[in-house]
Amino acid sequence: MRRNRRKGLAKERFLMVASAVLVLGSLTATGLWLGRDGKNKDEEYVVDLSAIENGSTGRAGENEGTLAESVRQEISTNDLDYDPYFQETNSQKVENPDESDSASMSDGAMSEDGDRKADEKGGAGQGTAVENESAEAKSGENETGEQPEEEAGEGTPALSTAMQPALTFSDSDTLIWPVVGNILVNYSMDKTVYFPTLQQYKYNPAIIIQANQGDLITAASAGKVISVFSDPQIGNGITMELGGGYEVTYGQLTNILVSEGSYVATGDVIAEVAAPTKYFSVEGTNAYFKLTKDGEPVNPMTKLS
Image 1 (tube, rainbow, N blue to C red):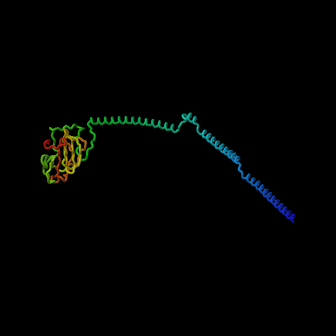
Image 2 (image 1 turned 180 degrees about the vertical axis):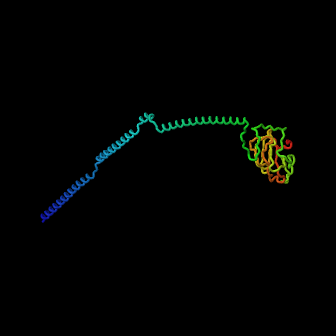
Image 3 (image 1 turned 60 degrees about the vertical axis):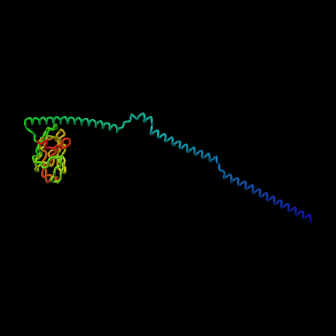
């Protein structure tokens, strides 16, 4: 019995050892197979960096070569378009047709201008000669007694004016009456006098001479007309410079025949008597006559002869 039991135990041990060996062998073989398969797969996934680097370097070189080639072509093209030495050397040899045309046109205009000025001078000389001949002809006509026709204003007497005569009125000189008539309001600067229209007393720096509408007003002395004006009180008026600081003013006028700057001789007709202004409606038609020396009123009666 013991012997059979021992055989059975030995047999079991052998089986267990064999089973263990088989299991270990199977595991070992499986592990080896799995390890080799994984290595192959890892090798498939390995990236060759050196190859990539070489490939990139090659492509970069190619790109750099292409870029350099394009730059060289561009530079060569620009060199064909612009050559500084050629431009500088030949710049003075190039002619500008526009400038040539403008210069020729300018020369032509100058020559034409010169010709035109010469013609004008010649025409002016001819015109002067013609004027001289005309003046000589007129003087010859005057010497033979034939007088040229004069243009006179309709209904206005001619004025006997001198060419800028000397104004020499002095304290000893006298005046003629501008119009013949009675004194309506006398000169008075030391006391007031009565004005019927205004119904008040006032100083009077002039004399108010009775006249008829349309009567002629003559120059009381030779002088120069320095003002032709209009005033609400004395109507249209004339102021003349006589010389020596004396001035004379005429008022209540119409149809004035003189103008500022003209010279008048003693006795020349200068205007007519107008209708009185509203300030002298009661006094009636009159001529206003005032004399001053250095701007101060002077009694005209002391100078009227």
